[in-house]
Length: 221
Image (tube, rainbow, N blue to C red; front, side, top):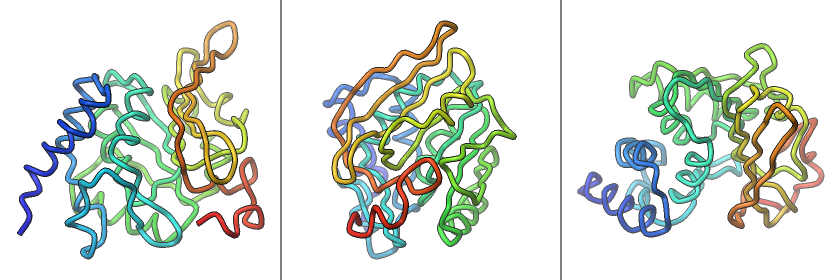
Protein backbone atom coordinates (compact mmCIF):
# COMPACT_ATOMS: atom_id res chain seq x y z
CA UNK A 1 0.00 0.00 0.00
CA UNK A 2 1.28 3.45 -0.94
CA UNK A 3 2.25 5.92 1.79
CA UNK A 4 0.11 8.76 0.48
CA UNK A 5 1.18 11.18 3.21
CA UNK A 6 4.83 10.85 2.19
CA UNK A 7 3.93 11.17 -1.49
CA UNK A 8 1.92 14.31 -0.76
CA UNK A 9 4.76 15.86 1.23
CA UNK A 10 7.18 14.99 -1.57
CA UNK A 11 4.84 16.63 -4.08
CA UNK A 12 4.83 19.87 -2.06
CA UNK A 13 8.62 19.90 -1.69
CA UNK A 14 9.64 18.89 -5.23
CA UNK A 15 6.79 20.07 -7.47
CA UNK A 16 5.62 23.24 -5.74
CA UNK A 17 8.34 24.85 -3.62
CA UNK A 18 11.06 24.27 -6.21
CA UNK A 19 8.90 25.99 -8.87
CA UNK A 20 8.33 29.09 -6.81
CA UNK A 21 5.08 28.53 -4.91
CA UNK A 22 5.64 30.62 -1.77
CA UNK A 23 2.24 31.22 -0.15
CA UNK A 24 2.42 29.20 3.06
CA UNK A 25 -1.35 28.81 3.27
CA UNK A 26 -1.47 27.40 -0.25
CA UNK A 27 1.40 25.01 0.48
CA UNK A 28 -0.35 23.88 3.67
CA UNK A 29 -3.62 23.26 1.81
CA UNK A 30 -1.86 21.29 -0.92
CA UNK A 31 -0.16 19.24 1.78
CA UNK A 32 -3.45 18.64 3.61
CA UNK A 33 -6.03 17.71 0.93
CA UNK A 34 -5.81 14.03 0.02
CA UNK A 35 -5.62 14.14 -3.76
CA UNK A 36 -5.79 10.35 -4.07
CA UNK A 37 -9.40 10.51 -2.84
CA UNK A 38 -10.35 12.63 -5.88
CA UNK A 39 -9.28 10.16 -8.57
CA UNK A 40 -10.43 6.67 -9.56
CA UNK A 41 -9.15 3.57 -7.78
CA UNK A 42 -7.05 2.73 -10.85
CA UNK A 43 -5.21 6.08 -10.69
CA UNK A 44 -4.69 6.38 -6.93
CA UNK A 45 -1.01 5.44 -7.16
CA UNK A 46 -0.52 8.28 -9.65
CA UNK A 47 -2.43 10.89 -7.66
CA UNK A 48 0.70 12.80 -6.65
CA UNK A 49 2.45 12.57 -10.03
CA UNK A 50 3.48 15.79 -11.73
CA UNK A 51 0.68 15.58 -14.29
CA UNK A 52 -3.03 16.00 -14.97
CA UNK A 53 -5.15 12.84 -14.74
CA UNK A 54 -8.37 11.78 -16.42
CA UNK A 55 -11.55 11.84 -14.32
CA UNK A 56 -13.85 10.65 -17.11
CA UNK A 57 -16.39 12.55 -19.21
CA UNK A 58 -13.52 14.08 -21.20
CA UNK A 59 -12.34 16.04 -18.15
CA UNK A 60 -9.19 16.07 -16.02
CA UNK A 61 -7.92 16.80 -12.54
CA UNK A 62 -5.23 19.43 -13.06
CA UNK A 63 -1.52 18.94 -12.42
CA UNK A 64 -0.78 19.78 -8.74
CA UNK A 65 1.54 22.64 -9.71
CA UNK A 66 -1.17 24.25 -11.86
CA UNK A 67 -3.68 23.97 -8.99
CA UNK A 68 -1.16 25.67 -6.69
CA UNK A 69 -0.31 28.45 -9.17
CA UNK A 70 -3.96 29.28 -9.83
CA UNK A 71 -4.79 29.19 -6.14
CA UNK A 72 -1.85 31.42 -5.23
CA UNK A 73 -2.93 33.98 -7.84
CA UNK A 74 -6.30 34.33 -6.08
CA UNK A 75 -4.35 35.86 -3.13
CA UNK A 76 -6.76 34.50 -0.52
CA UNK A 77 -6.57 35.56 3.13
CA UNK A 78 -9.38 33.46 4.62
CA UNK A 79 -12.62 35.44 4.70
CA UNK A 80 -13.46 35.48 0.99
CA UNK A 81 -16.33 34.15 -1.11
CA UNK A 82 -14.96 32.42 -4.20
CA UNK A 83 -16.57 31.16 -7.40
CA UNK A 84 -15.02 28.17 -9.15
CA UNK A 85 -16.06 27.39 -12.72
CA UNK A 86 -15.55 23.69 -13.51
CA UNK A 87 -15.93 21.49 -10.42
CA UNK A 88 -14.56 18.35 -12.06
CA UNK A 89 -13.42 15.94 -9.37
CA UNK A 90 -13.76 18.58 -6.66
CA UNK A 91 -10.05 18.67 -5.79
CA UNK A 92 -9.58 22.38 -6.52
CA UNK A 93 -12.80 23.11 -4.58
CA UNK A 94 -11.40 21.26 -1.56
CA UNK A 95 -8.17 23.27 -1.69
CA UNK A 96 -10.16 26.51 -1.86
CA UNK A 97 -12.44 25.44 1.01
CA UNK A 98 -9.46 25.48 3.38
CA UNK A 99 -8.34 28.92 2.22
CA UNK A 100 -11.56 30.95 2.11
CA UNK A 101 -14.94 31.23 3.83
CA UNK A 102 -17.25 29.97 1.08
CA UNK A 103 -16.82 28.22 -2.26
CA UNK A 104 -19.49 28.18 -4.95
CA UNK A 105 -18.53 25.75 -7.71
CA UNK A 106 -20.32 25.29 -11.04
CA UNK A 107 -20.24 22.11 -13.14
CA UNK A 108 -22.14 21.62 -16.41
CA UNK A 109 -21.67 17.81 -16.46
CA UNK A 110 -24.31 16.51 -14.05
CA UNK A 111 -22.57 13.18 -13.36
CA UNK A 112 -19.35 14.93 -12.26
CA UNK A 113 -21.29 17.44 -10.16
CA UNK A 114 -23.15 14.68 -8.33
CA UNK A 115 -19.98 12.67 -7.71
CA UNK A 116 -18.25 15.77 -6.35
CA UNK A 117 -21.18 16.53 -4.04
CA UNK A 118 -21.06 12.99 -2.66
CA UNK A 119 -17.32 13.27 -2.14
CA UNK A 120 -17.59 16.59 -0.29
CA UNK A 121 -20.27 15.15 1.99
CA UNK A 122 -18.24 12.01 2.70
CA UNK A 123 -15.04 13.98 3.41
CA UNK A 124 -16.75 16.62 5.55
CA UNK A 125 -16.32 19.73 3.39
CA UNK A 126 -19.21 21.91 4.56
CA UNK A 127 -18.47 25.29 2.93
CA UNK A 128 -18.62 24.11 -0.71
CA UNK A 129 -21.84 24.67 -2.67
CA UNK A 130 -22.20 22.79 -5.98
CA UNK A 131 -24.31 24.28 -8.79
CA UNK A 132 -25.20 22.35 -11.95
CA UNK A 133 -25.25 24.98 -14.69
CA UNK A 134 -23.49 26.68 -17.61
CA UNK A 135 -20.36 27.98 -15.89
CA UNK A 136 -19.77 30.68 -18.49
CA UNK A 137 -22.74 32.56 -17.03
CA UNK A 138 -21.09 32.77 -13.62
CA UNK A 139 -23.44 32.89 -10.63
CA UNK A 140 -25.07 36.34 -10.57
CA UNK A 141 -27.38 35.47 -7.67
CA UNK A 142 -24.33 35.04 -5.39
CA UNK A 143 -22.21 37.86 -6.82
CA UNK A 144 -20.10 39.78 -6.17
CA UNK A 145 -17.17 37.44 -5.47
CA UNK A 146 -13.75 38.15 -3.97
CA UNK A 147 -12.24 35.64 -6.35
CA UNK A 148 -13.22 33.68 -9.44
CA UNK A 149 -11.18 30.72 -10.70
CA UNK A 150 -11.92 29.12 -14.06
CA UNK A 151 -10.51 25.61 -14.55
CA UNK A 152 -11.21 25.41 -18.28
CA UNK A 153 -9.85 27.38 -21.22
CA UNK A 154 -11.71 30.40 -22.59
CA UNK A 155 -11.17 31.95 -26.03
CA UNK A 156 -11.17 35.37 -24.32
CA UNK A 157 -11.85 36.83 -20.88
CA UNK A 158 -15.65 36.84 -20.46
CA UNK A 159 -17.08 40.16 -19.24
CA UNK A 160 -19.54 38.04 -17.24
CA UNK A 161 -16.84 37.13 -14.74
CA UNK A 162 -15.37 40.61 -14.45
CA UNK A 163 -18.82 42.04 -13.76
CA UNK A 164 -19.33 39.51 -10.93
CA UNK A 165 -16.09 40.43 -9.16
CA UNK A 166 -15.95 42.79 -6.20
CA UNK A 167 -13.74 45.83 -6.57
CA UNK A 168 -10.36 44.50 -5.46
CA UNK A 169 -11.31 40.97 -6.53
CA UNK A 170 -9.19 38.61 -8.64
CA UNK A 171 -10.10 36.42 -11.62
CA UNK A 172 -7.74 33.58 -12.62
CA UNK A 173 -8.41 32.04 -16.02
CA UNK A 174 -6.58 30.24 -18.86
CA UNK A 175 -7.13 32.09 -22.15
CA UNK A 176 -6.15 31.18 -25.70
CA UNK A 177 -6.78 28.63 -28.40
CA UNK A 178 -8.19 25.13 -28.14
CA UNK A 179 -4.82 23.43 -27.64
CA UNK A 180 -2.69 25.92 -25.68
CA UNK A 181 -3.36 28.89 -23.44
CA UNK A 182 -1.77 31.43 -21.13
CA UNK A 183 -2.84 31.73 -17.49
CA UNK A 184 -4.16 35.23 -16.73
CA UNK A 185 -4.81 37.06 -13.48
CA UNK A 186 -7.33 39.89 -13.77
CA UNK A 187 -7.68 42.36 -10.90
CA UNK A 188 -10.73 44.60 -10.72
CA UNK A 189 -9.83 48.04 -9.42
CA UNK A 190 -11.81 51.21 -8.85
CA UNK A 191 -10.46 52.57 -12.13
CA UNK A 192 -10.80 49.49 -14.32
CA UNK A 193 -9.12 46.12 -14.69
CA UNK A 194 -5.45 45.19 -14.50
CA UNK A 195 -4.50 42.10 -16.50
CA UNK A 196 -1.30 40.09 -15.96
CA UNK A 197 -0.06 37.05 -17.90
CA UNK A 198 1.64 34.11 -16.21
CA UNK A 199 2.51 30.57 -17.29
CA UNK A 200 1.62 28.71 -20.50
CA UNK A 201 -0.92 25.94 -19.86
CA UNK A 202 -3.26 23.43 -21.49
CA UNK A 203 -6.83 23.04 -20.22
CA UNK A 204 -9.98 21.38 -21.51
CA UNK A 205 -12.28 23.95 -23.16
CA UNK A 206 -14.73 26.18 -21.34
CA UNK A 207 -18.02 25.23 -23.00
CA UNK A 208 -21.11 27.40 -22.81
CA UNK A 209 -22.74 30.63 -23.92
CA UNK A 210 -19.65 32.78 -23.30
CA UNK A 211 -17.03 30.13 -24.13
CA UNK A 212 -16.56 27.48 -26.80
CA UNK A 213 -19.45 25.55 -28.29
CA UNK A 214 -19.46 21.75 -28.41
CA UNK A 215 -18.87 21.90 -32.19
CA UNK A 216 -15.71 23.98 -31.72
CA UNK A 217 -14.16 21.33 -29.50
CA UNK A 218 -14.91 17.95 -31.08
CA UNK A 219 -11.24 16.99 -31.20
CA UNK A 220 -10.06 18.85 -28.14
CA UNK A 221 -10.17 15.98 -25.64
